[in-house]
Length: 233
Image 1 (cartoon, rainbow, N blue to C red):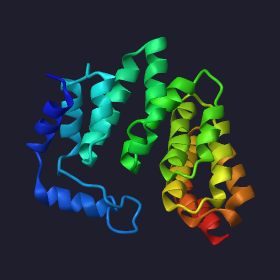
Image 2 (image 1 turned 90 degrees about the vertical axis):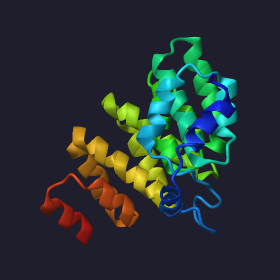
Image 3 (image 1 turned 120 degrees about the vertical axis):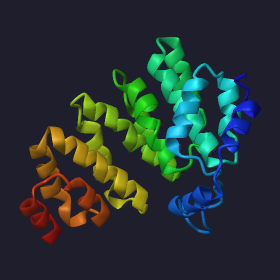
Image 4 (image 1 turned 135 degrees about the horizontal axis):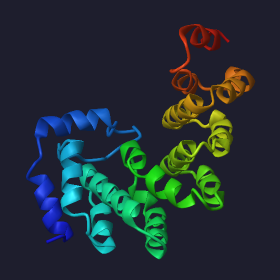
């Protein structure tokens, strides 16, 4: 059966307490941290992905129940299911999955949940459409919605379309969250792999105001001389 209770019980039976405790530290689930209150079963990602393959035809109602789980790994399973379903969907089914995903962003509430899904679903859906939605998300008070916006541009980068990545990166120069700086630097690095001159231009204009984390991620694939140059500015 593909119902939520059966799936959750299957994952919980695979839990490892030591892995769960490590995950709580890794995903910053302590008081005042970005993942405050998140709870873990202790199941590795490859196991979650195998479970997703076994339940690929799970209904949206069941996925909604999975997203409502207090367990991090169950919510991760839910977004992986959505991503895999989206890859196979066409037409109205893609629209339904996209709309459903955006209705559930309050439950897509840690960086790995975003990074496992946003580029597949939001980026994939908007690849040939107006992209106003990512700019709306970038204005959100939610750290995770702002990260979804930038992560969605990974799909555009793979299409050699860089404008949205650079526009959001400039916008996020003043963002207060380190996790936004990290994803912005990562996407700048990915764009730079395809057009290094455009990355250099962005760095030359903005290096003095770039958060250090964003800068370090962005220049990671440049040669050592260039990295030292930008870090010295």
